[in-house]
Amino acid sequence: MKKGMTIIACAFFLLPFMLLSVHSQEDMESVDRSVFDNPQRPAAVFKHEAHNETAGIEECNECHHVYEDGKLVEDESSEDQRCADCHGPEDQGNQPSLVKAFHVNCKGCHKKQKKGPIMCGECHVR
Image 1: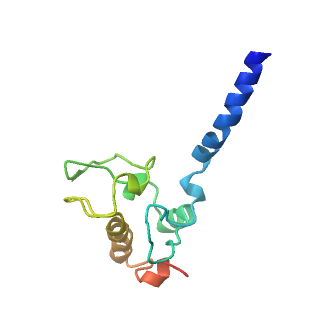
Image 2: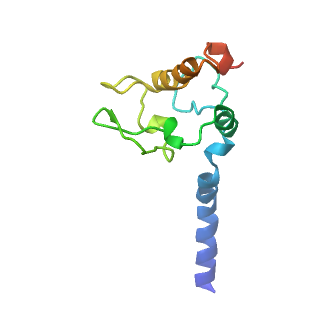
Image 3: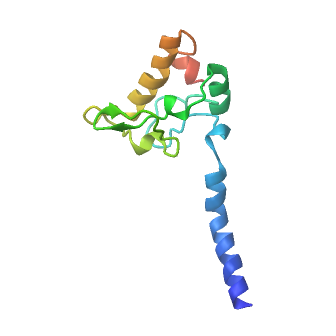
């Protein structure tokens, strides 16, 4: 009986962590800005799944890149990490800050493709 209660208690304790891992990028509605102490703008609207469908993006590494020694590693993806896991509040050598990384990657792609928002208020909707 005691062993059964221990298993139930452990499962109850671990349930919130398991549910957090189930929350996927497909459910994403906006860019996570929780790493910023004093954000100047609202979170950028970003519906992950709808964006990729509209943009025709099938490979995660088109956005979720991996660099080693300053070089892009082909066919590697960082989709299991947050952008903030690699990009901090300030530039670090060749690694851009989190804000710069978002703007260079997202806005840069929009400019290159000649579609998608590029003005501040188009992503950061009040």
